[in-house]
Length: 221
Image (cartoon, rainbow, N blue to C red; front, side):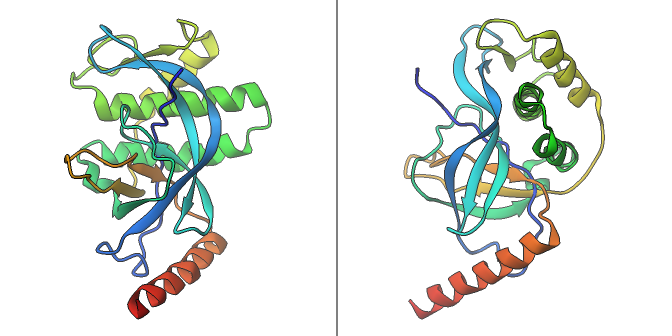
């Protein structure tokens, strides 16, 4: 089975050290909490098997952060790729809700000690984010509409469906970091665009130090 790694990763803190004109390198490292699912953007006429959940991504060859994807059918690159760092406001009207959910729930997923529940939470949040981003109708439901999702076995468990419903019904607003993948020569993204939560202060400091070193190196080149 061919695996696609869709990544709705959420929200970095915006910093002058990561100027929007600079290329921010991302590299996929490994899958995090999640499960394989089937998704469709054709109102359920065709489905594709993908991994839905947290993706561990390395930023500028430095620290690794958990992220979610926002491009359900873009294949994750196996090598480092260039992104532009923006805020989730660049995603349009859904950006604030996406940021709210990722900022609120990814830390809870990371701290979950029950392995089965942790995977279900990661999958449910990713599916919810795809629904927000890809659904073209006004009704939000992963079982109907233009975007649909189901378990790899065919049906979500009661726990999985409850989690998805809870996330879809939790309305809020926020701002997160959005890493938008650059376009290739065919005007198709070279890899996944990602969102990720705001880092803890210690992580921010480490990122700024790493970013400063990279910018100094690039200026010398």
